[in-house]
Each structure stands twice: as C-alpha cells, then as structure tokens.
Image (cartoon, rainbow, N blue to C red; front, side, top):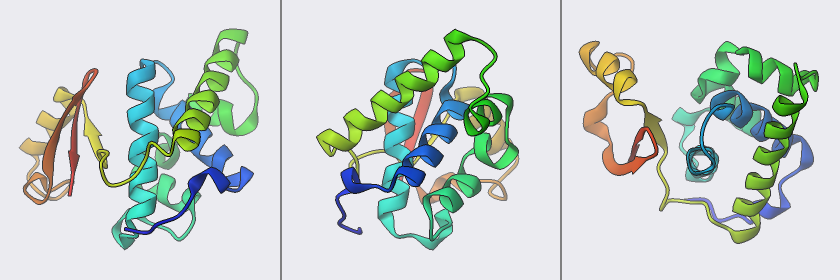
Length: 151
C-alpha cells in the first residue's frame, strides 16, 4: 500500500476523479457515490499495476465504465456543458463528497476496490473469469444497490 496524503491531490487529478465519479454515479445515492470515490482512491493507493496508471486519469479510464466508454454524464462533466441546472448541481455535490473523503482521509485499503450491481455481477459470473475473476477477491459487503469486493 502506498502511503500518501491525497488531500494534496493536484487539481487536474481531482477533476478527472470528479468527472468519472459523476459519470459512474450521476443517479446514485450519496452513500453509493462515496463508496465509488473510495474505490477509486483505494485502487490508486494500492500501487497495483493491473488498475492502470501511472496517473489517476489512466486508472479511471481502465477501471471505470464511465471513463472508458465515455457515457453522456461523463462527457457533460469533462466538457462542463451540463443539460440542466440539476445535472450541474449533482456534479457539484460529487465534488463536495470528494473533498469530504479527502479531508477526512477516509480512503485506503479498508475500502472496497470493486463494486457491481447484482444484475451486473450475475452477468459477469455467467461469462466465466475472462471479464472478472471473483475467486481472486473477497466480499466486503453491500453499499446501496452494489455488492463490494477487495483483494
């Protein structure tokens, strides 16, 4: 585990994180969004090359659908062109959650590195270990509608 004070994170890294977490969790609850943020930070701090890197943006593009597939909420966040005031406000809320997680140093190995809805997990498990090997991780519990896992 890499020990680093992420509250000193460069603004460009924070923006990449916020853009991706908005794309991932635009319609999620605050509890789910916080878990998503903690997941990204836990992956980043793990130092595991499989998560991508060396930058936060590389890690996010490799491991998060919103960044790798660039869904509409991700594109809105990256461009700053939101479809309405509500979408822009949700983006701001995610920024505040990131600041809270970083300020409280509420990140690291104690948090899940992976999360799946039950439907997504069932689809992946039916496909075998090619997409994701669940035998390599341990269940961490459930946050909102997501099952969570870590090494």
